[in-house]
Structures are given as structure tokens and as C-alpha cells.
Amino acid sequence: MSVTQKHFWTLDEAPPAAEFQWSEKEIREVRFMVLADAARSLVDQRVSRQEYEEDLMWIKNDAWGPFTFRACCAEQGVDADELRERLLDYAMRRQFRAKPAPRVRRPRDTHQRALFPVPNHAWGV
Image (cartoon, rainbow, N blue to C red; front, side, top):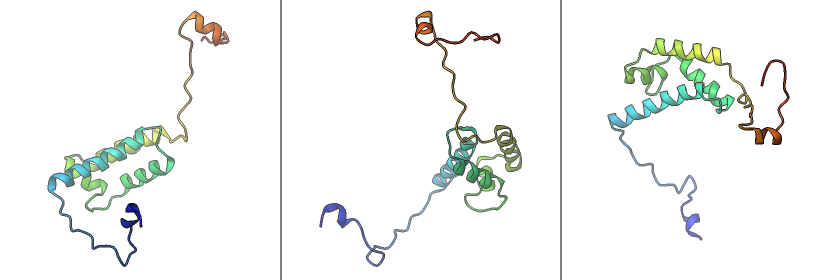
């Protein structure tokens, strides 16, 4: 049996899970990271549709629990209803796109213009 195979157990052989106690500081940090990650996914155009929609559902959920939107906002001293309203307003204006809009590459100098000709339209370049 190789070294890596020794580290895998069946459910019957697995050792009992170790009890882990979270400190208040660690809970505050995790709540902040969860809230920041949800806000980031609304802004970042590179996230998947699934992550975007999951974070929207988490923000819309008004339940109370250890890592709910309301609990994470309360930990940071932020009004959950006001932040929810702002994030949802931004999400409605953003309207998720599967891919970010393509960037248009413009030549920097005349040498590059010869290599990458750009059509001269009436509306400008």
C-alpha cells in the first residue's frame, strides 16, 4: 500500500471528527468574508451565472442564522435592509451577462496602424 493510499478510509474506518471551537474573532472574519464575497460576485463580470444567482438568493433571504445575510450585516454594524436594497438595485442595473463585453483593441501608433488597419468610419475611430 502506498503512502497516499494510507490516508483514505472507508466510512466504517474513518476516525471520529475532531471537535473544533471557533473563536469570536474567527466567526467575525468568516462573516465578513462571506458578505464581501457575495457583494463581489454581483460586481465581478467573471463569476459564473450559478454563483451570481446563489449569492442573489442569499442576499434576498431574510432568515436569521449564524451565517445569513442579516447576521453578517449585523456583525459588521451595517443595516441589512439598506445594504440589501443597494445590492439588489445594482444587480438589477447590471443584468448578468454570460461573458464580459469584448474589448476593442486600438493601435497605439502609426506603425501598428499599418499592421492592424482600422476602417475610417464617419462616426470616428
